[in-house]
Image 1 (cartoon, rainbow, N blue to C red):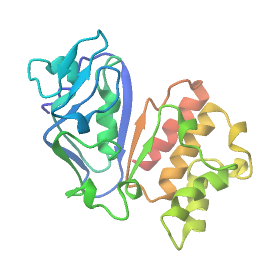
Image 2: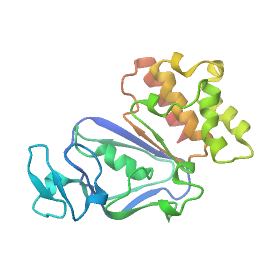
Image 3: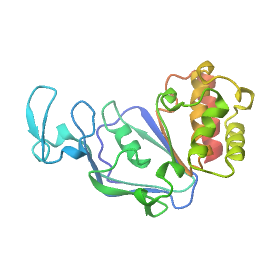
Image 4: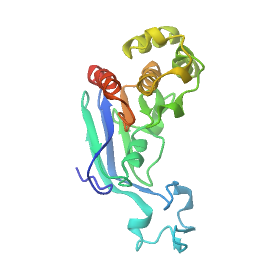
Length: 231
């Protein structure tokens, strides 16, 4: 409702919430972004050079299409739902998705999870809202599957980290790959590894950017089965 992040056509993001209370974007979520795709919230009141060489004041309301990646977005996702966000390249889908997980902060408005602002979630938003990048290799940090899934819970100090890791690996169908090196995994397995990592941290809502990008049919089916089972 009231979502204004660009144009439409073609699937991109998938957001599914398995917690209580759901995700809410309110107050007209807006985000300033530079023409080359770098967030420039810290530059409000300053000047930037656009791609065509013009110098533009970031506060200049005459340049809304150039500088605002999101403008006045309001959205509520209910518990247990699977929501697909569609839009053409450059529409602002990934920018919006990163607001769900607290990776980006809005220039205006607020993102709530279970009725609480993301900045108040302890120990951090990632412990409740997981994010899977379009290229899942970007978030692989361990040598083996087990090491990678264990990274998040270990850093969050969970006493039951081992049990969390084992359960996440099982739920994502990676038990046979537990000791495999991460670099040996297929694209679909990498996507499932990223899902296992956020599940092990206790995510109650998961945001996936281009969840089926570059996957073959079997890879798509494997990821989709997990998504449906989680919701």
